[in-house]
Amino acid sequence: MKIRTDSARKPKVGMISLGCAKNLVDAEIMLGSVLQRGMEITSQPEDADILVINTCAFIDSAKEESIDAILEAHQQRGLNRRPDQKLIVSGCMSQRFAKELRREMP
Picture 1: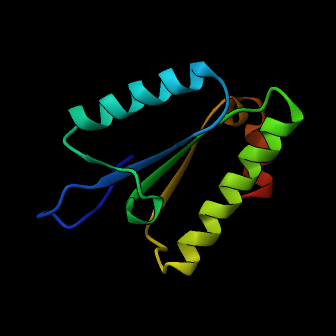
Picture 2 (picture 1 turned 180 degrees about the horizontal axis):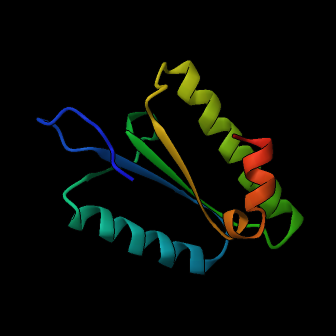
Protein backbone atom coordinates (compact mmCIF):
# COMPACT_ATOMS: atom_id res chain seq x y z
CA MET A 1 0.00 0.00 0.00
CA LYS A 2 1.38 3.39 -0.96
CA ILE A 3 0.43 6.28 1.28
CA ARG A 4 0.46 9.75 -0.20
CA THR A 5 1.19 12.55 2.19
CA ASP A 6 2.82 15.94 2.06
CA SER A 7 6.42 15.10 1.17
CA ALA A 8 7.72 17.54 3.80
CA ARG A 9 5.94 15.63 6.55
CA LYS A 10 6.19 12.02 7.66
CA PRO A 11 2.92 10.06 7.74
CA LYS A 12 1.53 9.54 11.23
CA VAL A 13 0.26 6.11 12.24
CA GLY A 14 -2.10 5.46 15.14
CA MET A 15 -2.91 2.10 16.69
CA ILE A 16 -5.92 0.86 18.63
CA SER A 17 -5.16 -2.61 19.97
CA LEU A 18 -7.97 -4.71 21.42
CA GLY A 19 -8.07 -8.13 23.01
CA CYS A 20 -5.41 -10.47 24.26
CA ALA A 21 -1.74 -10.12 25.15
CA LYS A 22 -0.81 -11.55 21.74
CA ASN A 23 -2.48 -8.57 20.12
CA LEU A 24 -0.34 -6.22 22.20
CA VAL A 25 2.80 -8.01 21.03
CA ASP A 26 1.57 -7.90 17.42
CA ALA A 27 0.83 -4.17 17.81
CA GLU A 28 4.35 -3.52 19.11
CA ILE A 29 5.82 -5.40 16.15
CA MET A 30 3.68 -3.43 13.69
CA LEU A 31 4.61 -0.11 15.32
CA GLY A 32 8.30 -1.08 15.21
CA SER A 33 7.91 -1.66 11.48
CA VAL A 34 6.23 1.75 11.15
CA LEU A 35 9.24 3.44 12.77
CA GLN A 36 11.69 1.48 10.60
CA ARG A 37 9.90 2.79 7.52
CA GLY A 38 10.39 6.38 8.66
CA MET A 39 6.83 7.11 9.72
CA GLU A 40 5.75 8.68 13.00
CA ILE A 41 3.53 7.17 15.68
CA THR A 42 0.72 9.13 17.29
CA SER A 43 -1.41 8.21 20.29
CA GLN A 44 -4.20 10.45 19.00
CA PRO A 45 -6.37 8.60 16.44
CA GLU A 46 -7.67 11.88 15.03
CA ASP A 47 -4.10 12.95 14.18
CA ALA A 48 -3.26 9.74 12.34
CA ASP A 49 -2.95 9.60 8.57
CA ILE A 50 -3.24 5.83 8.96
CA LEU A 51 -5.20 4.27 11.82
CA VAL A 52 -4.72 0.56 12.52
CA ILE A 53 -7.38 -1.21 14.56
CA ASN A 54 -5.93 -4.48 15.82
CA THR A 55 -9.01 -6.58 16.55
CA CYS A 56 -10.02 -9.62 18.55
CA ALA A 57 -12.96 -11.88 17.74
CA PHE A 58 -12.67 -15.03 19.80
CA ILE A 59 -15.49 -14.22 22.20
CA ASP A 60 -18.67 -12.30 21.47
CA SER A 61 -17.82 -9.36 23.72
CA ALA A 62 -14.42 -8.92 22.03
CA LYS A 63 -16.07 -9.13 18.62
CA GLU A 64 -18.57 -6.44 19.62
CA GLU A 65 -15.79 -4.24 21.00
CA SER A 66 -13.88 -4.60 17.74
CA ILE A 67 -16.91 -3.73 15.60
CA ASP A 68 -17.65 -0.74 17.83
CA ALA A 69 -14.05 0.49 17.50
CA ILE A 70 -14.14 0.17 13.70
CA LEU A 71 -17.45 2.01 13.43
CA GLU A 72 -16.32 4.72 15.87
CA ALA A 73 -13.09 5.29 13.93
CA HIS A 74 -15.02 5.52 10.67
CA GLN A 75 -17.51 7.95 12.21
CA GLN A 76 -14.76 10.11 13.74
CA ARG A 77 -12.99 10.20 10.39
CA GLY A 78 -16.12 11.82 8.96
CA LEU A 79 -16.73 14.12 11.92
CA ASN A 80 -13.12 15.31 11.87
CA ARG A 81 -13.33 15.76 8.10
CA ARG A 82 -10.51 13.30 7.48
CA PRO A 83 -11.77 11.37 4.43
CA ASP A 84 -8.13 10.82 3.44
CA GLN A 85 -7.37 8.97 6.69
CA LYS A 86 -6.73 5.28 5.97
CA LEU A 87 -8.32 2.71 8.27
CA ILE A 88 -6.64 -0.68 8.48
CA VAL A 89 -8.31 -3.55 10.33
CA SER A 90 -5.85 -6.20 11.50
CA GLY A 91 -5.98 -9.06 13.97
CA CYS A 92 -8.13 -12.13 14.24
CA MET A 93 -11.40 -10.43 13.28
CA SER A 94 -9.97 -9.42 9.93
CA GLN A 95 -8.67 -12.95 9.45
CA ARG A 96 -11.75 -14.85 10.58
CA PHE A 97 -14.40 -12.58 9.08
CA ALA A 98 -12.71 -10.96 6.06
CA LYS A 99 -15.60 -11.56 3.65
CA GLU A 100 -18.21 -10.35 6.12
CA LEU A 101 -16.23 -7.22 6.96
CA ARG A 102 -15.81 -6.34 3.29
CA ARG A 103 -19.51 -6.85 2.68
CA GLU A 104 -20.77 -4.98 5.77
CA MET A 105 -18.09 -2.28 6.04
CA PRO A 106 -16.74 -1.54 2.54
